[in-house]
Image 1 (tube, helix red, strand yellow):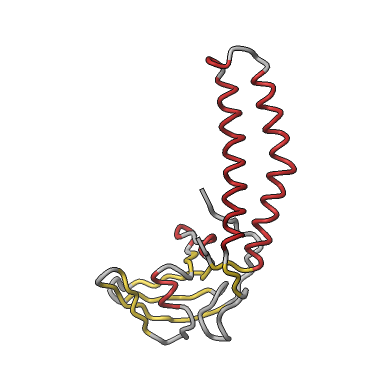
Image 2 (cartoon, rainbow, N blue to C red):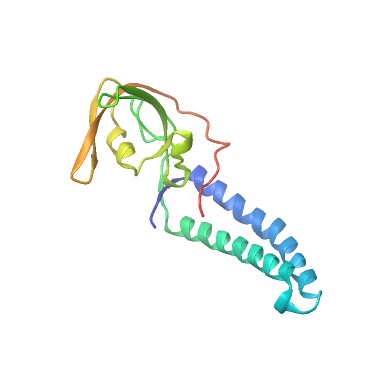
Length: 167
């Protein structure tokens, strides 16, 4: 995996692990035991649903632990003033489409294209990182690519409400 994560990302993941272990695990085990006590397991939908939820919780805990154990820790802000870096908002003009969009640069586990949060490891994120307003960057995709013009850089933006993405 070796995702580049901030200390803030790690802390959020640790909080989620603790919540899943301390709050969710006992409730899910109780639901599983209640369903098991209802008798014939071969036709017991509640048992299979409870077992599936328990397994999903345990899988998420393992996933988060693996992410933490294999992560490369980076600073919370990888850009100097006026430079594109983590947590900063970037207004980008795409000449080919004659469109302007605003993105926030985030770590891999926070990337969410539907919310215009792009990862520092995405092609656009890599092209923008450490560049300044007014620069034109070439975004490489396979054998081709496209140009993007950085119109403005602002931030950093508070990320305390962002969720950690996963399966």
